[in-house]
Structures are given as C-alpha cells and as structure tokens.
Image (cartoon, rainbow, N blue to C red; front, side, top):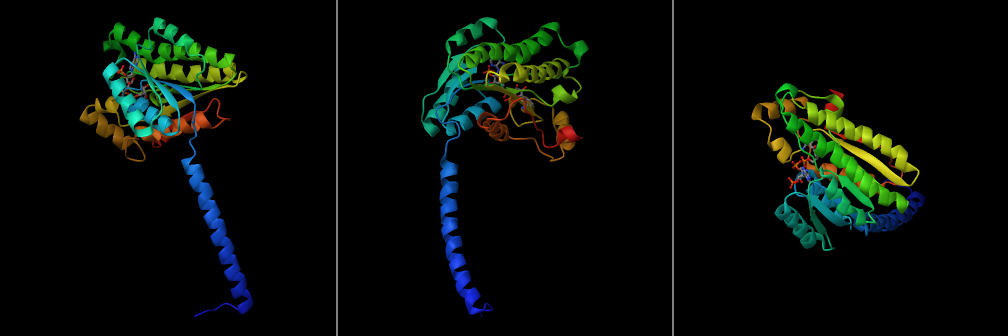
Length: 277
Ligand SMILES: NC(=O)c1ccc[n+]([C@@H]2O[C@H](COP(=O)([O-])OP(=O)(O)OC[C@H]3O[C@@H](n4cnc5c(N)ncnc54)[C@H](OP(=O)(O)O)[C@@H]3O)[C@@H](O)[C@H]2O)c1
C-alpha cells in the first residue's frame, strides 16, 4: 500500500534516486579513503620492533605504506617481523640490531638524515619493591626506558629539525602517572618519558617536529604474560572494561598521532578506563 500523495511520491522517487547517487558517490569516497595509505612513502624508525607493541606498530605502519627500520636486540626475531611485513605489504624494510640504552648505538643512526617518524617503543619492566631490586637492575630499567628514549629523540630529532619536519611518538605507561607497587624504577622511567615528551613538544614544535606520547594501561604482550596469575586477575578486575588492551589498539593510536598534523604534546591514555579508577 502506498500512503504518499502523487506529488510527494514523484519527489520521493527523485529523492531516492539522488540518495542512491549520493550513496554510490559516498561509498566510492569511503572506499578511496579506506584504501588511501595514511603513511605512504614515510620513512619510520621503530625501536622494540621485534615483539609485542613495537612489532604491531611496524605491521600497521607498513600497511599504511611506510618503510620501516626495525630496531631491537634479537636479530632473528627482527628478521622474522621484517619478512612478515614484506610478505604481507611488500615494500622495503630494514633491521638494525642494538641496545638502545647504549649511547654508541645511536651514533650509528646519525646518518639516517630523512626520518619522518620515530616511534620509541623499546622498554623493559620489573616487578619488585625498590628495596629488594638490585642497583644494577634499577639502572638498567632507567637506562633502557628513559635514557634510551632520550638518546633516540636527541639523535633522530636533530635530523628532523634540520629538515624542518618530523614526528616522534614515545611510549610511556600508566604506571608512570599512577605509580604501582613493585614498579619503582619502571614508573620513574615512564614518568620521565612523559616529562621528556612535554619538554620536546615545546622545544621541537617550532621546527615543525611534533612529539607525542602514548600511555598504555595493561596490553596483551610478553610483558603482561610474565605476570603471576594472581597479579593478572587483580589487574583484570581493576580495569573498567574488564580486559587488557591489544597491541593492535595501540598501533591504531600510533597511526593517528603520526598522521594528525596538529597533534603535538598529546598525552594519549589507552587503558580501558583504568586511569579513571
Ligand atoms: N604490555 C603492556 O602492558 C605495556 C603497558 C604499558 C606500557 N608498555 C610499554 O610498551 C612498550 C612495549 O612493550 P611490550 O609489551 O611490547 O613489551 P615486550 O613484548 O616485552 O617487547 C619489548 C620490546 O623492547 C625491545 N627492547 C627491550 N630492551 C631493549 C634494548 N635495550 N634495546 C633494544 N630493544 C630493546 C625488545 O626487543 P629485544 O628483546 O629483541 O631486544 C622488544 O622488542 C614498552 O616500552 C613498555 O614499557 C607496555
């Protein structure tokens, strides 16, 4: 049964045709947006790219058309990630083996003159109260997480400033904001990464180098795999969304920070709401 007056009916037919046309055009537009690669031709350096969040960021960046230089200490894992990128996405990617906490390692990176995006993911953790953590472990955590990130920003950021453009994404942790039992050195190092990001967003911003930081809560990787079952279930219970995040969800946020040209000094929580508790 038709309830429309003839004039409205004919109008509605033409409206439907217009809508159909608009829909087709819009879907074409969406399709072209979907297939547009947001990081096409960008040269990226990703530390900690052999596993976990860093490997996932590399996969996502490659899917967006970036060429990646993958850094870590384990050559076979890095090669495995690189082969995966080349198989899935094509493109040329490279591997560099080294310890990011070693100042001499960064001297090797001085020759990378045209880096569009640096993602500082590499990090280590510990689960022990300050007074029973060895001084050498305390030092190693701060050297890797904070000094390593600072050295990376210093070396690669200098080259980015020289060409007046670039983007640095650091990876901190919610523990750096909230603290947490048994994470003294880790929390201190990650609080330092947030402070470093804020200082650099101001120092490098005027040279068109954007600096942002991701602040994840608990994410499913080897790092959370190492938690005791008790610690894991306590942590899961404390997250409002009642699950840990996925590395792919962090990688999505990294693409956003890399692509959004007004993002500078973003401190982006991805913690399932844990920071609100
Ligand atoms: N997973 C979480 O719940 C979580 C939460 C908040 C923040 N984060 C942060 O996110 C980042 C990635 O964590 P993840 O969970 O992916 O950890 P993961 O699976 O343990 O991976 C750590 C990565 O860092 C690399 N790495 C560690 N020390 C290094 C060094 N001295 N030099 C070069 N590479 C080094 C490791 O590579 P090799 O071992 O091969 O060298 C590996 O690729 C870390 O900074 C972590 O603090 C993680």
